[in-house]
Length: 376
Image 1 (spheres, rainbow, N blue to C red):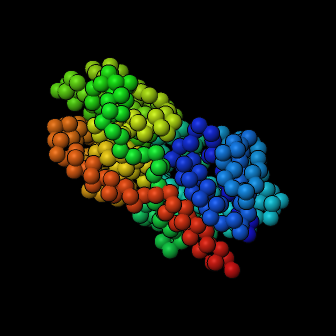
Image 2: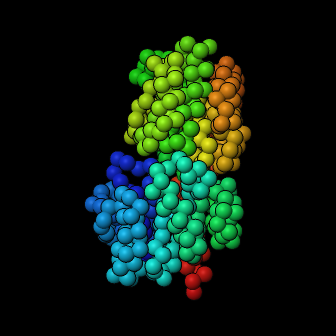
Image 3: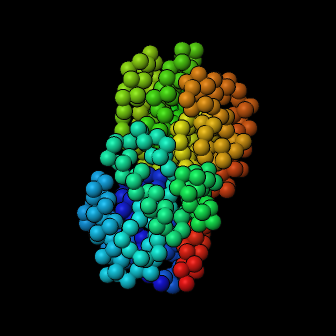
């Protein structure tokens, strides 16, 4: 069988959540199934590290997809031609984008529908594209994979998709994420905060990550806890007016460090050395940093919304993501209660064992097999 794959998010040094999902899943699937041929469709020159196995053929299809207009050209003009040329029997799209102009059976991985619920968080052209085409992609897909029961129900209710068409496959956690020895933690704290304890937030600086309200909450907390620090890890995609306004109002901005994007070892060290992760995103399909923190034995403060209670279970303290006071109270609780931190750390390590990339790859492949059986 010849399986074509959308690999346009396999970008060296720039893997985000969906990119990691694609990379970790595909390298396992291709290695486990040498009886099949995989054609990777890139939209720009590719890195050799992403040609995962001998049964992978990399193909570059221009143009690079950097704008919704280019998305449509790539998926509805260039991709159907490539599928015919390479005689593809199936198409797998880890980012959920599909071609509306092919009869090749397509498996879409739709991680979440944040753009349906908070369209104002995206530039207008992107929001309009997602809200116009993702309902069509959901209908066109032969099967859909998503990363939580929450997201499955959201796709069912928002798009009217039959639940039996959707498989839930949880994200995994990289092997680098393990607890760090105390000496290692101290060295990292010296690097980021001069040795002071800190809360950490991990994720691209997108409006739905709720950084503006986190800054407001930390400013309240820092009024009482002068030795506390906040470290924010992530690439600034859209530093919007809310973030700018929150930053401008801060009285304790000097206690906040923005690291920008970190490679995995640095990210692990920074996350594993924190007093707690504060992840107050108000919309998540899964929330990989929560699982990564749990695997590192780091207590978690999470928003009590969308998929996060499903992922973290009883290994987190929850707060209202729309209330700076609620976020601040959760930070105060973990700052003062060492026994609770230890309990959450132990619970988190046990729970994180459920999230492995091996399981993710196996679940994604089972969905592919279901789709192909249904096409016979």
